[in-house]
Length: 414
Ligand code: T4K
Image (cartoon, rainbow, N blue to C red; front, side, top):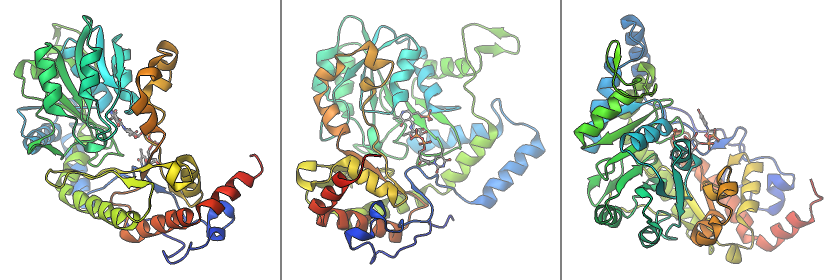
């Protein structure tokens, strides 16, 4: 198991404003504490699988480890078909094409840019829909209002691994005869009303990127209970080949390699350990941060299964006095690389900000939430001591907010 990043301070330090690295103190951590530091399972098991791959000289193209990985993912999320792919972005593109989406697709703007790019890449208009401020996911009421004769589908995102309002989206999609696809990049191992994420809509797409709770170095999977869709996806991810020298339709190279599958299998073996660590870090952050007015930690439903992959703070600057971006700067100076995912929202990034300059007018909650959110490090590389130090830094800042703010404002321009 990986050791946590070395701290230069114990959590009893950093009690005074002058101790903060941004004002000249020594950074709390020698090396950076990342959001998205990979979880890594048993190295011996991984090495043995790599030896097997080399001995077999079967490196990619539907090798035995990819097949085993697909089978185990399908079992884990209780779905009939799993098609492993090289990453979730390509997985989404394949699913969008295989489902025959075109025209307009309704999608949140508050998500990683890949969600919107997969539509635009295929010349489909991403129609940005506002989120619900509580769930951070598509607001079903707003979805309904955005449906036009050109709409062919809804692409929901289970942001932070917390499920969308799946029942309501399913009802809308069925009634309005739309396809329903989920970007489940964050949600492997999570459940909704007792059913595993992966089994909803027409298809769902997981990411197994290095930074994800479960990684296969790079990788992803499309999961579905639709047998015909699964057959189409299998052909499409392998250039459209139906036999050695025949294609019936267009395809691409979306295959997962054997080395990626070996990493995915190794990490699947350790998945329970990863959940336990994330859960315990999350609980520790909650205990330490609950006393601060103006900071709320997004919760996971304890009646469902969750991977607790993200530690997401919402900062209400009116109460904390120190803003989200100032807090991030202070943490970065301490080598705590907090991230403001998914700021500023896809609609404010190119090409969308030029294509849809007025999009912000209908996205008030997206704008509000993306200005308040800060994600903190968690995962196997973070232990409770690191969590305590991060929280001590935050508490020093918040308990001395007026002084900190004044000192920040007095700094000479960079
Ligand atoms: N849909 C959603 C909702 C997504 O969040 C994503 C990906 C996708 C679709 C597409 O999935 P893939 O096609 O990637 O399978 C990172 C990831 O690259 C991206 O996969 C992920 N979402 C997103 C939320 O986070 P960046 O731009 O923040 O990556 P980067 O390089 O800044 O890395 C994040 C942190 O992790 C850094 O502090 C460094 C650390 N890190 C990273 C890597 C790769 C490590 O410590 N070790 C590593 O090997 O996007």
